Length: 344
Image (cartoon, rainbow, N blue to C red; front, side, top):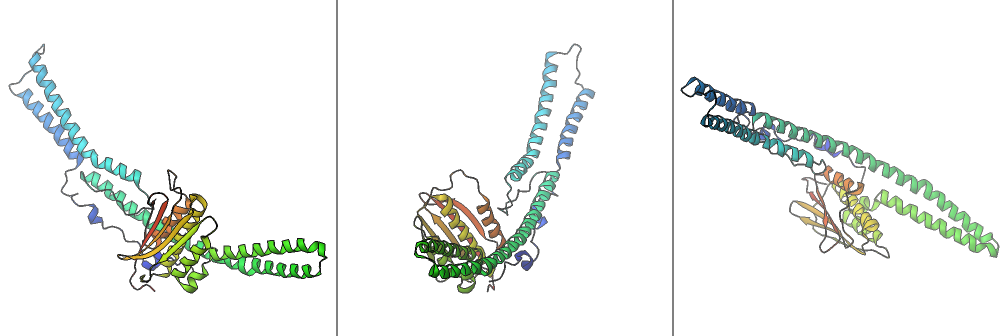
């Protein structure tokens, strides 16, 4: 499999939500300005009519006249308060939507309602959010594509240069061990073992940077290899890959592999788990990856760079990503990828 391509360029520009869907009811809604103006005008007209009519105010003011004036003022203030409260409710909803907006969880929009000015403001905000999500997705696609290219370059240099150098050192140590005095052979042997361990570590790092098994044998074999790689003395990783999986694009397969890799890395480093599971199975309209462990769970921890990176990768292929507590305890990492017509 080659480098990750810019998926946004393949699919064309991001499709923004139709503006008409944001503007429903705008032309039929009386603006907040006219609501307040009409109410104030009605109050002033009524007051003027009373003053020009048979109603008068005595000097000194009588108690009944005070009650009438204060009652009219109270009604006018109450009507203004109701109009403002009703008119500002959509703005309060918009404020809550803006506070909860997250570009890594796209698709959530503020409902368009209220007077025409408020509806226009909410529509502008929704359109801006569409544009920001499209730009972030495009930028993330470029960044992750460059990251994959850099991974491949580093893996190639580790394998071709550092790996060959350590292999040459190992051969030289072998010749030295054959000629060394008996009292030095044990120390030379220890140097050989250390060099061999370093060479194995270099190869392991190169495999993680560039998943050759994914390119050569496909996603099911790559996930099985990943589970075997993370199975250590303190952690047992089981795997289950469905046999009737729909075909995915190369980009989707790489996203599945990287999310599984990052999920198992978090399990091994942070969860204190002794069992984990990697499951890939078909679901309605696509496939779902599940990485589950029996560790300490999320608790109240804030999402780190690893989880955010998984979310960004999911966005590249239109997948739904979630991290939630597992059954009983532990953590469930789920990735649901839709099947793309014509995947190959």
